Image 1 (cartoon, one colour):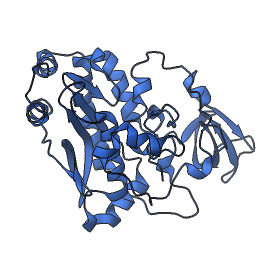
Image 2 (cartoon, one colour):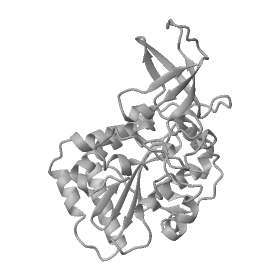
Image 3 (cartoon, helix red, strand yellow):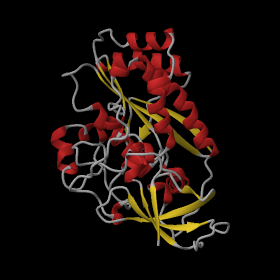
Image 4 (cartoon, one colour):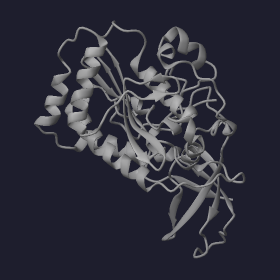
Length: 335
């Protein structure tokens, strides 16, 4: 089983947020997955996140058939993150545009001080996170292990993580990579949920959504938001504060849908599911990825009643989102 970038909805920001050239083509690796892998079975036994953060451990799981498509190593990649959910394109936009104030600057400078151990650094960071975001950040159990901190929201009987926090005391001190460990906690959430008592509700959430979540990882004074480094400084936290509220609104308004064995789980595909054609909006469902093509998909059309030109509901087409990385709009070919 693999937790795709589509599920994590945060992992490939390490490329997108550190490169202003948003039109750069995403080149698939030699291990690009075929359509049979895009919605993997929820059957994997994931390692403990703290041990998984050790490169001696994670490389054994990640080299051939990655459990987590988190770009560790670089061949563990997937669909670009901004195509999995619009909240991440929004975050990227805000990182370049939002205006910061003294609060954001104080937030960033407060992590520069030394601390005697990881617990002290974590407690101080959680304190300023809670003050700045005005949200509770608690150590949350994912299965039998717990995070350094987690910002959650309630939807019905479910607790949903908006952000997961992992802390290491300083560079060179503390075992493993905090980024990899945070991705492993997310993997545990996708597989196990936060409560065994509400497993069925969690499965319905997973079927209805790509489950977007932000990762915050701190090593000494160096803060990352799923790959957005301190180079972005205070603006990153300003953007994250806005996006956490917008992400919470997304989950609040999310309508659960029941599993349909005749249609693949749409949340495992890019969120783009409509296109304007001759001034009419055409909708489509994804069926599968075209083998060895990272951003080409077979789709099925509906909502074609008002279109002239021979297109009907149920017709098939190929959606080519490779061009989305180079120009506005994707290419749609009808069959």
